[in-house]
Image (cartoon, rainbow, N blue to C red; front, side, top):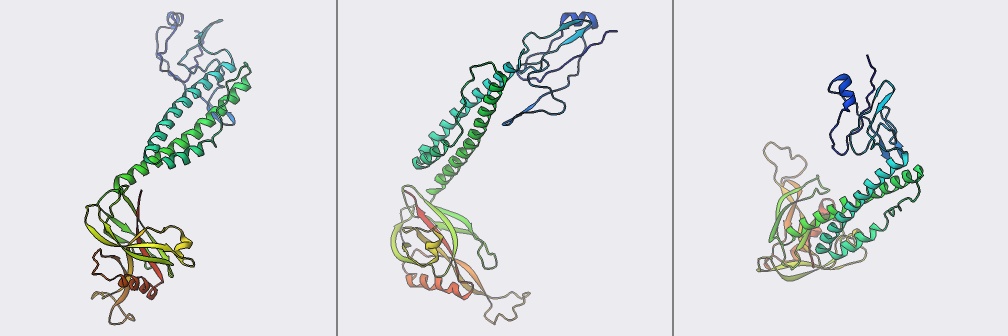
Length: 336
């Protein structure tokens, strides 16, 4: 009876396991159930699981699967197993260098797409990249600790680059989606919820103003007084038809619009909330609300026809003081 100890190493490169001829002659060819071993490398160094071995152990081989057996006093082993701790750290470092080069190529591709969509966005994002840790230099000595430190540094750099790459892809995706919808002739959206009863206005259709760069539509709710100077202006829809629109000519001091900061001069006011009495249904209790029904808010899409008086728009804005002094507004911003 011969005692045989078999050590199985993590499979990395996908090479085939083999049994030495001497081992086969002594025992015959048999299937061996390998026990996986491995380690997790972090920025602080090497964090080992209880079942793992040191990364520089002769029983760990990054490139493939190695089998070693002791038969009596003779040892049969894969001669390509790294002989030193430094060699293992160097191999790990080289793999991270390859990953770093691949990430750099992917980042340049995303920056190119970003520049096609918006050059300023690209410039702003590139400015953030200078905050990344610099890639460490390749150690010139055989000292294991220098290779371990270089590996940890380049791995940390790659992790930071991966986060920035994911952020770049997200920004590009958002901008491409916005660009695809910006030139639509109209949009159907939900707006809200508003402060009063948490109401959300569903499936509201807004015809869009014509512009070479399209336009963006958004909703917000601000308290009175708003502090906006409004003007009527003749515009064209995306389909070419002429129409009347309400333009925000100026944002005034002392109003909630200036304090909030989201509305800019040149934006268009496309819809507003307006208090309106709703007659109760037969199964509803309207006690205390008067015969005229309950006062609620509706969303008025401002008509494009000039027959709808401009003064009516101003009056409807002011009517929000009857409930909570909050005005919900749909704003359209024309893009360059």
